[in-house]
Amino acid sequence: MYKNSVEQHEIDNMGHMNVQFYVQHALNACDLYFRKKNWLNKSQSLDSMFNLETILIRYLREQTLATPFQISINLVYVSHSKIVVFLEMHNLKKNAISAAFLLNFTCDATRNKNKLSLSGIDTDRPLPKFSVPGHGLKKGLANLPILDLTSLSKNKKSNILDSFCGIATRKNSNEFTQLNAADYMGIVSKAVPHLLLEGGHSIEDTNIGGVALEYEFRFNRFVEVGNGVTLKSGLRHITEKIYTWTHWFIDISTTEVLAAADSVIITMDLKTRKSVPIPEKMRDKLKQILI
Image 1 (cartoon, rainbow, N blue to C red):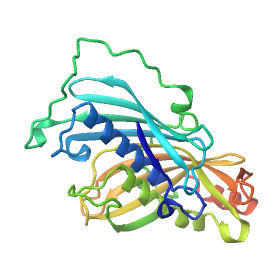
Image 2 (image 1 turned 90 degrees about the vertical axis):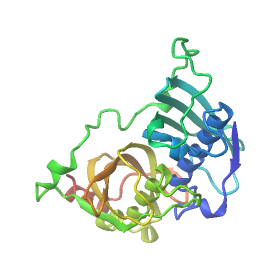
Image 3 (image 1 turned 135 degrees about the vertical axis):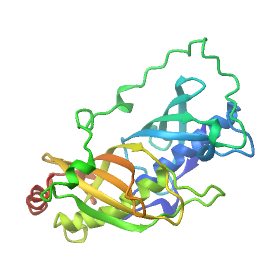
């Protein structure tokens, strides 16, 4: 069990904990859990010993300043090369689940000087049955096809947007020199104001913002700190209140696709904290940039 609370620096311009910090707390919870399982020792880190291949995040309720929360974790699958875990973030003030996470890790001991030993794992012994609950499974992204950026880029009318271009940096300082999933989520957060601008929307004028409901990341590689990274974004779908994006993270020096992320966003009145229809001006602009 991981316990913490929402701090001031984690609050964004929507008035709640930014999406990247949900992910960072989930990674911290995994780190703690893996240590309790003796899958990591004091000299090892989660980032250096395990490869995070995918993460699905369902944002169920917003977390606001000073909210106490805890994260529970369940082992879904484990072998000598793969670990799947399911996490729930519980708002202790409201006694409600704020977010759910499904993470797929692989292990590659050959790339490390220290040999990885997943002590206590017996692949011949079945795990206690655990089924991921419905609120932890894909919903808005369930039927979204995966798009290949290379084929889209060949189409000059594809409406792919350049939404971020900068230097790879880490939010949390430690000895590991690569970004993590929370840092990649942070890049998407930095891109959002550019996407709102492309959509002809002003939060200041309307007091209407966008709130994440669901994200799925597929990671190919976590880039080293100091490398140039650009983000390309494509608008996939629009409904009355919801719009869906796909983002591609690109290593500027190699043009390699580092990761891809699909997201479902809902418009919200920042005063009432209730979902509202997409403003007409924004809807018209968004329709023009659909890929």
